[in-house]
Length: 144
Image: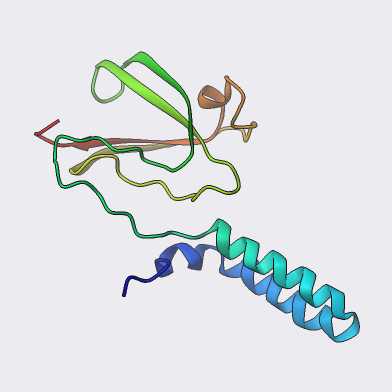
């Protein structure tokens, strides 16, 4: 049987889940409706941090989406940090109902990663990809 979630992802939410569980119990002792309210928030948090298992195609030449969501744009640009060539960037918007786990889009070895601090603008805004906090990854794969 395949587990519904990987433990690592749900552990990232442990403080939020603990907070809602504590509020459900403590407030529920005084007002019954608050127990159900905080239980609902607890369950919504579990749903937000879910990480279901994905079946990845076996073809090493395929590139799959790194995240669930809605493709907002596909742009070409000159990447000057690692690859130093033309690249395509796929912008994917994640709503609160989408799985918020990013996966490797190809099989391979990570050869570069860089965290960029930034803002937390609404992800539907055009300028968010340049201004928001982000992580850049580069993979080495001889097949692609």
